[in-house]
Image 1 (cartoon, rainbow, N blue to C red):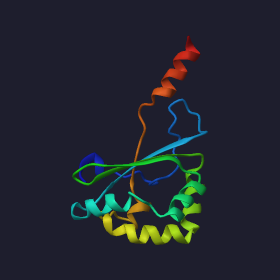
Image 2 (cartoon, rainbow, N blue to C red):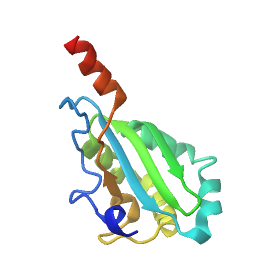
Image 3 (spheres, rainbow, N blue to C red):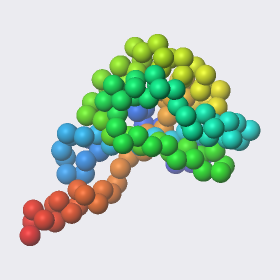
Amino acid sequence: MTGASAERNASTHAPIDTHLSGRTSVQRICFQLQVKPDRLAEYEQRHVSVWPSMLKAIEASGRRNYSIFLREDGLLIGYYEVDDDEASKRALAANPETAKWEAEAAGFFEALPGGRPDQNATTLREVFNLQEQLSRLSQAG
């Protein structure tokens, strides 16, 4: 990654008030990773049927509306919503199944400084949200 895509949020994956109106009831988290080109097919195949224990761990951590998008060159964008991202990260870190999954998944990603790629992904800042703007518009009118 180069340029702006290489810039990392100082508190990577940290909870950020992503609501443009200042409300913090739901955090929308978007992150970026780079899958190694020679592992793309295997990465996709692995996500066709994620371990049930991993799915349950993600759900129990409070994450919802979780999606991963993958471009042909390996650019990965992930998105989820959560009420408390720090609590979610702690719950996942304490789960042995999560540690096992992440250890196996680490080899799919280009290395990032500071540790495991799943914990050091570049966090993207939200600059537009349709629902937020429509809500402000309806309140003003």
